[in-house]
Image 1 (cartoon, helix red, strand yellow):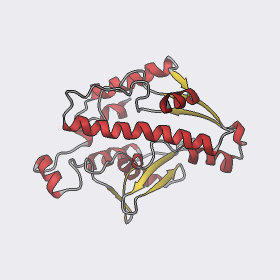
Image 2: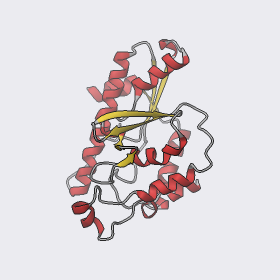
Image 3: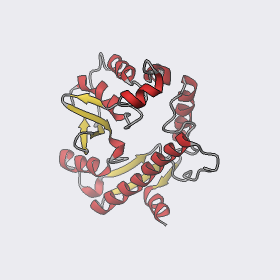
Length: 237
């Protein structure tokens, strides 16, 4: 919980010396995200292991291709990997790991379903029909509608990324079902109401983070789930 309260805009988004104007003209992002990497370094300082399978998708910004990291990745790289995973071009600078620049994997995929199923079958020897997939998404599904009559520039930009994520999730699910038709696509778990902050908001406090946490907890306790096949059909109609 303490870690969650540390994730505020004051802690992870630092203004450049001459503000946003410097970010636009002379830097690789509107804000300096080095503070987030510092926080992650502190979190992983005494880290011993995940205890479960994990995959974080990044985008190689130089080559424009997806890069998959998992629980076997060296722990010392995770502060940089997590910082890269929230870096969106123009908003936050790319993160350099080795000689490569990385940014958020959401640029190419919203959720890595096929890769996860492949790991179950190849690494664990699970039969395709015994693989069960539950999807937890922060993107709106039933709540995709938004009144844009009073929207301004940043709101429209946030809406653009929101819709990209929404449709990439539907495409990822459809592709996975076509590739592995015998797997059990069980639940699509999504927010019961629109999250309180748009994805491109540059100001968020500990109170905002607690609201997001409480909504996630409430939704989980209420088991607010939809059969993923029904969800997919409703998105394609």
